[in-house]
Length: 271
Image 1: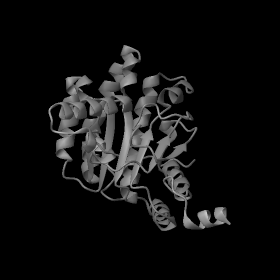
Image 2 (image 1 turned 30 degrees about the vertical axis):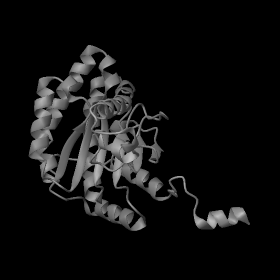
Image 3 (image 1 turned 120 degrees about the horizontal axis):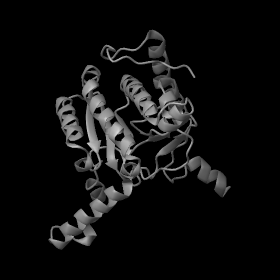
């Protein structure tokens, strides 16, 4: 795989001429996903295969985040959601968790200008109250500074769990019903979705998982009912824009019927 190493001082809306041609070819090839989500798996294994500490893999994974975010914005993808830290990740060794929190603070601060230069808005989903105060403060500052950016929305799932999100929505709806503000008959898919963290986001069109595992790992369980999945054996630190383009080509080659059957197929079956 050809690897394109991003730089923090990439000028706004810029891409190399060769890469710009690749991106234009993708636009002309077919429909781009509006919302791409990614499970960024394999940082630790990437480092271990190089006889490095797991933290080295997490640090290298940040470069992939930057490259994928910039390439997505340049392509015209409206939403990118990254599974950054799950509720289950709190069970990892304390040293690794602390290092991840420090890396998160450093990255959010250091990449603030890159987000501004590329007109990317930062938002979060998950229970941020579980994060250290320094993380919460850095996140809130960057979200506030990028709030008016409208080229792309980058969402980080932090201390996030799909089941936690669904259970919280159920509790909130139950409280409304108990208070008489809602009746059970009012509850629809649309109303339920409005109680989720992702209420203002479209459902993902494409879910990318690196590291070769075939599972959702408690990520966007409600939202991914009809999301196209792209699984790769590449570890996240090796997943750069060329790999993203491969995933998008795979997406473009699929027939998205959302459970329906097209008229031609139905006529063939009846005949």
